[in-house]
Image (tube, rainbow, N blue to C red; front, side, top):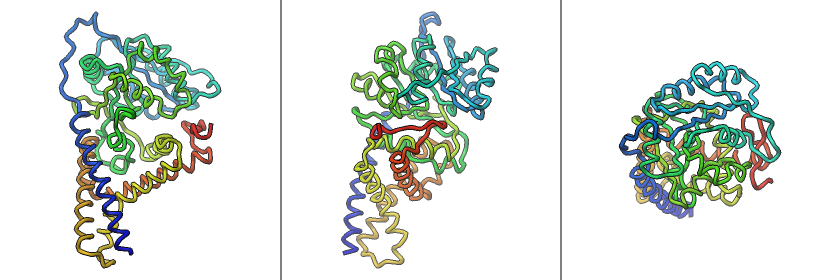
Length: 376
């Protein structure tokens, strides 16, 4: 009977791995930025860009972020940072960049029904004057050419919205190699109804965002950029990219902060439904099953067929995760096959913790409580 259960799990795991490989090959083909033609119009005709940064208690990371934005070669650039009621030195830090052209906006009291970041994004939209808005998180880093290349790509594709998964360019360290699978799932589950999206760096035409209604209809959505991406994807106006060394969008984030982000996003991503949580956990266990069989084959008397199948599936999953790591890490990707099963175990724990924390009303963002739609 045990052997039958193992066979069933491996066969199911084979189907899951097959789908994952198919999705990843699609992602590698379509989501990698290809060379774009530089804008050849005169500076007068270039669309103006407003870089918008929501900041709440970000004194530790904001300087590096703003310095990379200020290094941009894009000629028509406005930079706005909204201080969302910070209790650290964020406000003074923003003001210290005033001489470089960074505009400080003080956030107002949070209205009832709004999530803090969503209200900050709305406030930034109202302050922006650029034809295109580039929203970035404070842990996002840009290169000199990044904004120029993104605008060129957006115009070339005639897109209303573009979002980009950042890479880790800061070498191999614990916070890199043990990153949760947040962006991996974006690649795996991309389809037009629910396209892959990144909240770390995304461009949107200001008129299109205003015509949509801004963030008024998204005031209590945990990831408002995902709803916008879905809206514009249905109108063939959305594009998604995984950054490259040439495009130069990267991020630096502590492991603990990445875990907190995953806990904040996973349960809403699963539709705030425990049924989907159970399906997700079972799916992850099926992916983990081949690793468990290989690790215990000297303990249990598995048949030759089970061992060979488990080995092949393990190699396939290790290869898949390594190829993904090569896309999003500058270095350290060679550790990916070794730690792959640990990452899966970590993800199972995050799914469970996210669901339990939301059900107990204990999920917060920057010190403010969040409520899932299921609790509203």
